[in-house]
Image 1 (cartoon, rainbow, N blue to C red):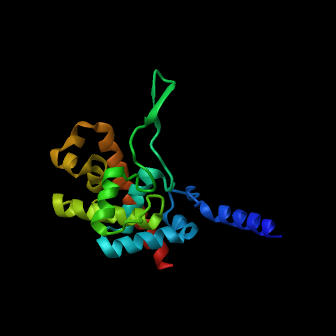
Image 2: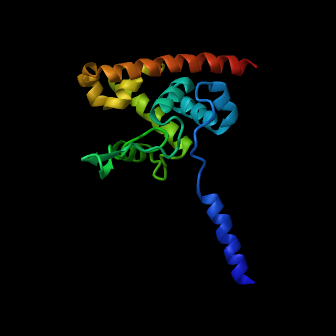
Image 3: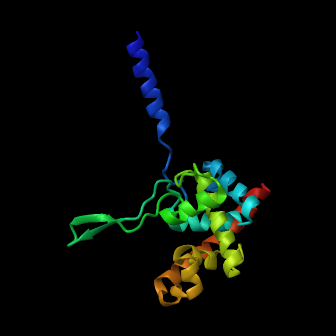
Length: 193
């Protein structure tokens, strides 16, 4: 009988181990995301209270970085088109935080057990990082476009203006800014209901 209990316990534990890392159904509808994944909105509201970064800005950046997929990774690099050479970067999770910046966040906030595939930790990280961009670079917390540029290029790269020579990145930042405004309007309407 004890062998059956052990097998049953292992089955239950295996079922609890993994997270739901799939994207919400409609990424263009902030209210739909809020209804489908209320945990996401609660995490973003908590980050907004702590760091001041509006929910719609967080949503737009997460949309761009991971499409709300919790275990998102950068694509593999290949030599000669067939030999895998690892990933393009160490970016991982909802916020696509790279190893070094994530380690700085965990050290500076004391959140040693933070995980990039946990929406609460990912949004807290984004709030922390964007708040630093405000303090160091003067970027308003509600300026999704500029916050995204600093997020993508790093604060030093942003200060040097490395993004200026990247027309593709400027176009992406424009889309992030536009999406943030759409999300803001949508969230205002569904919060009134």
